[in-house]
Image (cartoon, rainbow, N blue to C red):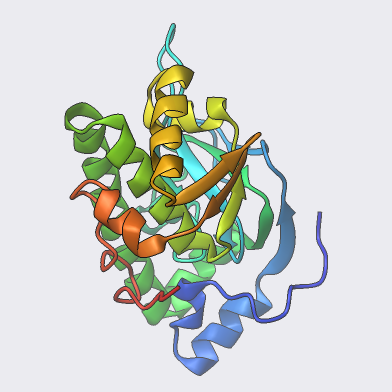
Length: 236
């Protein structure tokens, strides 16, 4: 669904381009709504559109038969969905699922390819972001294997906060469990512990961040606020 772009909402990849090249990218884009639960692509599916989120965020999800899905990466206003096109690959590597509703700039795959040919700064930006995203997914894999649920949940909430600046989210136990690759009971215990420490308020799927600094202390060492294409300039 297309609609008017929200005021003051920006995507950091596009915003960081030089003026004329940024304008060219914006002219090829349309603002669309991202609805919770929408699947934007499936593994192996031809990428028809790429998305530069302005608000809300998207999870990159991998699935195995007989197991619940597992979120391998998050994409918000710092990045884009479909960045593997920068490698000349036209198929999606993972499922992309909207977890938090919002808005995005959408561009067709053909338009992005043309923009990358005509706009060297955009191609450099996307290659840098692709490197950052690969690092995020690698870190997530190690974090899932080695770290306890509570600090992983704290890290996950901080990553969502960095990508939305909203301070509150609507996320069910099932969604959080899928993101962390654990049972719902584990999320209940971990969220209860963070709430007991007055770092968050969590009720009926509504999560509000009360103490960002305290949440950073509670998070596992995998959380790196500087691991951003814009150098970590995202003060809350």
